[in-house]
Length: 372
Image (cartoon, rainbow, N blue to C red; front, side, top):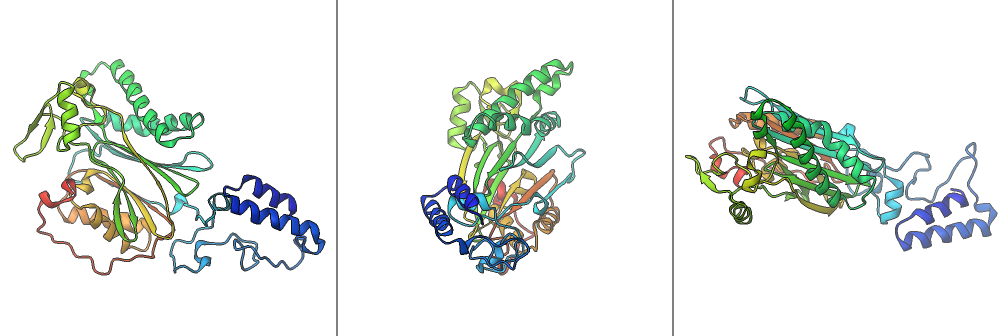
């Protein structure tokens, strides 16, 4: 590594410790010319932990000897220097995703994943109701709304909040142009996750789609369902002029129509307190403990709770196998709704395996994930 490169790393590195180490190495190179980097034609010896075998290839997460990880990804060097710890790359090619129609006539679920910027990955699930118009609109335009805001704002929680509110307004303008008034009752849940530098995870959600992190083989909920069962949500609906009724199954609905208190769309219930403002959560990943992120719609959440989902995924060889197994599992349990899932693997993928996963096929819906 040249002096110029070392100085550049010191300039862009995140921690003072990294600055001191890199600058000290740079001075040593300047003081002793024999320490200069070998030319490409020479046998190269490296004392960098990012290239321990002197192969010239990026060090993989496995090379640190922590466990036998089955997702082999290179280390992101700039973020690792910035944060002072190895951060594995999260590749979209390793992400698992699946969506199935269930027993419905139409699949109103939508999902999306993309490389939003050089440093930010984007993942989203949308569960439409009252038609697929709102979910389709979010699928087409949410990513661009976020991308525009990221260019101006560094706080990703604020970015997602503004994006949700902006796309709700844009959808209102879009639907009011149509001649079919029935589309004004179209709405969708939205659960969106942004991953920056492979370590900063920010999630925003409205409705009852969910985001869950598996840490040390335990499910960590990153979202809370927006339903009238929540005391704070019910009070807000009532203060806004809406009311809550219960159907024959004991499920609460806003104004007797909608089973959630926040959504994008549902413009006929805006005066009843149904809002598009998301709740957000920011978390720093610990790749030594964090195995994966899962985004799910209620076709899965209604049947399996978060820990059950976590256990099933932990039994799988890779995320693509995991989403297929979960899709089959909910069908075996009698799922009728559309179901969609995205599984994003992190550094601890394969480290924690659930020893013995058993589920009861006589489970009741009341004990399932919708009420978990």
